[in-house]
Length: 443
Image (cartoon, rainbow, N blue to C red; front, top):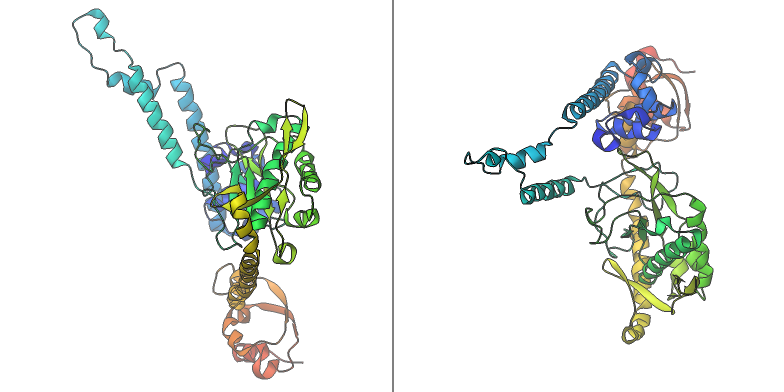
């Protein structure tokens, strides 16, 4: 992880420091406090164990671990710089190995000096490139359609391959490098961006599947030296260019353009960390959410914008109906159009069922809230820290939840607001009395 962020932390942002801390298991409560104290890379180099204990309220163990990992990172950087100095101007290790592989004789003076075999060197370089490609780490995409998420991609990490409709709720994914288009002028860039987004959006809406299209992620076999799904990012000079590009919705859809606006989320700009460059790059992502209440009974036709160099203006392609087929967005052919319309009700029913399943599954994640609260409050320990005082506000406990409150009984309670009329008989108070009867008086 440190290599991905860059060996020298001096230029890290607060978010990059947080990512580095997570890489070796620092607890989230400490990471959040460090972030709040605005500890960036430069401050990370200067902080000591006393700072972590006094300002972050950190225990000795994790404080010592952070200092140790920070020092290892600095030492690694220094060794790397020394190695570069000692090898500067000399034959590289790769060249030395190719020399050793070339046979020599003593028959003539010229034969006594080994020569580099260009084929051997090329093969070894190819092998090195393949090794780099296979060693790139996988990463997960940004959480789908969630606001307020502090998320960062690392350059050269790899997303899972492009995908098609699965259960309609899990988003399908499409990648676009946009490497060349990102350098275009505003008009050309907006037309290109809008074309790709609206093509993908129409395909998702007609199939009723959630989806995310990612710009700044390699998608083509022609992207030599990269793997499919590799995060590169694009320079973003003006975010408004991408946001305003969605104004093409009104011109590309002859009807139901309001529905499209509701289903196509605004662009998200996810920063890409690069250890080799200070240039800011982003992955630009657009989520598509075709809720059944919006798309029911509808089929969406679109005229995609396209900048024509011959006329030097944006023109609109022939109207078409698009759909997701596997990992691609394709037009519905004339011979399939009748069947496509007939199956609208089936797709609506599938989407409606998928949305219901999404809501029905929510309680499964909430069944053990008592244990989750315990883990949150105690940081995974059996009991809460004794040196802290708490004000406790509680309502009526269900009998099955009382088995999860042993950790509360160790708290130093300053005050309890107990909104349970039966608490003394069958609630928190009765449970607390069993453990503290000798030291507690009720008023």
